[in-house]
Image (tube, rainbow, N blue to C red; front, top):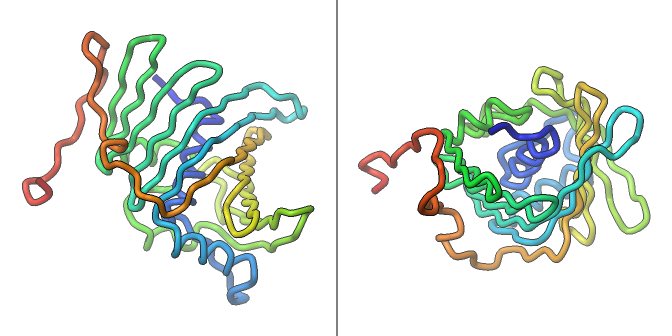
Length: 223
């Protein structure tokens, strides 16, 4: 099972929210950077709804999806696609589980490996990714403050990243890729820093489904 371009881009959005990805600038911290830093430093959990569109180079919408999202630092998240078909993705800190309900199939891969194989940044080490994005600037449009970032290399598949903040909450994300496609993500009904049941970030394959892959097990010290 492979992730669509739009769903791969959502991985990057999750990494941004988790605080794994940060932007650097030689010109010092600006208002936009402070907005990002404040969000990263002060938000430990987030949950809500998302709506997502993938637009091709001709500005034609080629994919739409929606669902719910739950995030907990560090490195744990669960998002559920409800439309156009149901799919559940869970990151438990070691593995990423992808459950396609219609196909009755579960795919599991090492979390770091999955994130490394997408046009996202490596999950394993904020120290290594601090300089991967350059801060370009920020601007206000209606009630949203947009922050523009530019990848210093396009090897990760992206040409631009824009984050929209409304009343201090991350509410919009835009990603442009090397194919000229743009992913638009809107977040709604967000709850910040509210407790999320730890079981939401664990996954056990349902009885009777096909399981592809072998999950990693916690090291003895982590048990």
